[in-house]
Image (cartoon, rainbow over all chains, first blue to last red; front, top):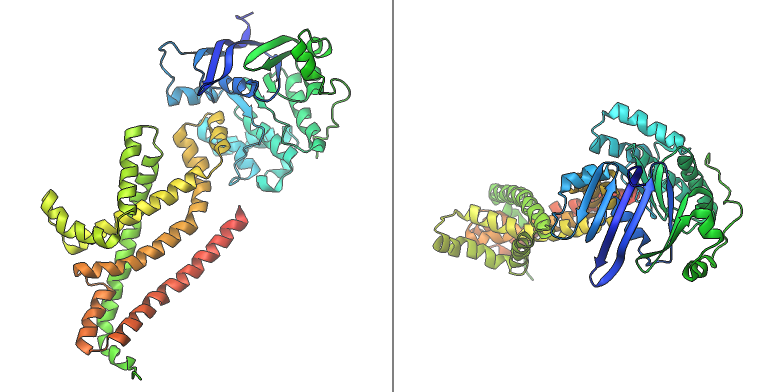
Amino acid sequence: MSDTSKIEIRSLRKSFGSNEVLKNINLDVPKGGVVALIGPSGSGKSTLLRCINLLVVPDGGSVRVGDISFTFGGGSKLPDVRTLANFRATTGMVFQHFNLFPHMTTLQNVMEGPVTVRRIAKADAEKLARAQLAKVGLAEKADQYPATLSGGQKQRVAIARALAMEPDVMLFDEATSALDPELVGEVLNVIQQLASEGMTMVIVTHEIAFAREVADRLIFMRDGVVVEEGPARQVIDNPREAATRAFLSHFHRTGALPPANAAS
Amino acid sequence: MYQWDFGILWSYRWLFLNGLGVTVGFTVVIVILGLVFGLFGAFGSLARFKPVRLVALTFIEAFRCTPILVQLIWFYYALPILAGVEMTPITASALALSLYGGSFYSEIIRGGIISIDKGQSEAGAALGMTPVQSMRRIVLPQAIKRMIPALMNQSIIQFKNTSLVSVLAVPDLVYQSQVAAHDSYRPLETYTAVAVAYAAILIPLTILARRGEKRLAVSE
């Protein structure tokens, strides 16, 4: 498996002070695979996601994405600022609170990565950015500032901004948790489209029905450990562990996805 | 009842204008130098390397927590003895006022930078920016907007603080008006006129600052 996997995490550990949030985590995501991370808050799922692009630097273990790997702990040197930046440029991340740049228009937000990081000429970056905005259905919002957009539109811009870096891997950190219920569908729709195009993705989510529909594999975490892992439908429909069952009992697991209207 | 006679000041007009020129020029110099010191202080106090942070914080607190009048006198009288550097009154007071202003600017700039949501620099980092790139492209453009009103305010205070350089015989507006007051025996008129001169420059500036503040608030 490990010779075909896009993401490989081994024995990952992370503590914040005396609080151990990740205890010996292993994770493999094959190329084009979609993995959903679920679990109660404080389970470590967001921290695990942030360790994949090293936004959080682990205390121990190893992280590999594509051909680049890092080992942590046991006296190994921390990667320098340049190496980290280059590494992060190959993965896209979408945040719960969008984190769009409020001082830039939508178009400038999407162009920022290609221009500043990839050093692409402005005209080419603009073409690329407009294409990405069109892809998430927001071509006509290019010249507006983020403050004028709805939550769902903001999150779709954030996805376009990440995609403009042409990443191999996309990471979603509770991308729909800050949205009004009626806006969740349009964002899920975009993520689902990415999945169908074969993007490798790790998705931290509370949308169980969506995870069941879109993810190949599902990982349930609690207190910094992986409690249960398996094919998404199997884990959601027939959880083996009591803790998984207890967690899933809080959700509607099946049924139609929220109505999506990505053209709005 | 005192008989006011402002007419007598007219014969000192060149003296006043001269002093005013020194005051304004001095302010420009200490605001620019102060902002430079302030930038160093702010980035120093935010540095990841602890010794840098300590040096920056020591500088900021030393100048923020001692009176500017004491600093002026200290720079002119004590520094030459301790460090062996002779300074003209103008150099000594420019240096003291710039450092004093810089310590306040530092805190304003630092506060502006840390007021920007951490998610902003995280989003920059996730795109593959180095810390320097995300500071320059993402954090500073937003932080500067928030700093401007406070920086304007501090610069207005700096303008008034230049009046203290008269104690080192720098020929600013206050020093020249002392000369005029002694010469004319009309201190009341003289100092009233000086107060009006300061206000006449600062009131339009404060109005301008307030307008700018409103415009920035709208574009947020």
